[in-house]
Image 1 (cartoon, rainbow, N blue to C red):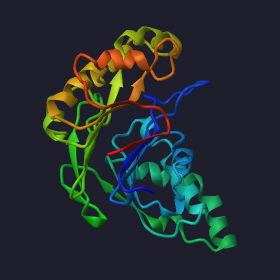
Image 2: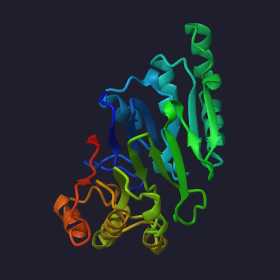
Image 3: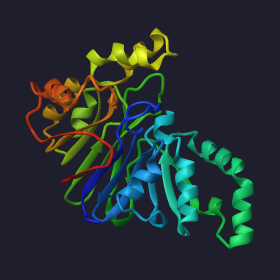
Length: 285
């Protein structure tokens, strides 16, 4: 793999999938040759393989928050990587409570895991995985890559984070799921690429009709906890980032709204390189 790119392997906002839709949130960041998985929504395993990643090489994962479209397939990814030859440690950073999910996943798969250890001679999957609770401390990964966190605004969740990955020459920022916040400007200042969640406000009523089992509370959540595309563009412009990628798109699967609608939503606020996320897009920086 080439050294510096981010692959948006899942670009849909929200956990539901429908015929023809994209998959929920997951990303593969390759920075100075290191492979880092950011979020593990449904479909992450297939998405990583489609990028050419050998699952046995999995070693670093970040989960931005505990909404299912960001960690539902974490257990499945780890188990599948194990069956694909994983035998080295995996370090996982995420909010408090993520390790409990993993323990419950392992318990649900205990018969299969024990059988494969006894019958196939595999190492104990539980011994390979270490969890770290995300907070405000700077994280240093192998190769000197540093990771900074910003607690963003995604109510009702309190432990929800933006992430900034920095090597000696490059900076990549993921907004996570968040309402627009002024702090994101300084957090993303001068980044080589900002991957920011985005929503088309005009398309929300049609989305509500498609969901079918949500009340007015769902609309209220979207409006208070997510960022409209034009606000993401304003943040990117103020931060002076070199590229802007929109992902976690709400909606991502309405045929009445196309790439042109997203471009129109940001054009008055951002005139730099723009990427409207779709599953599998690889962006070099």
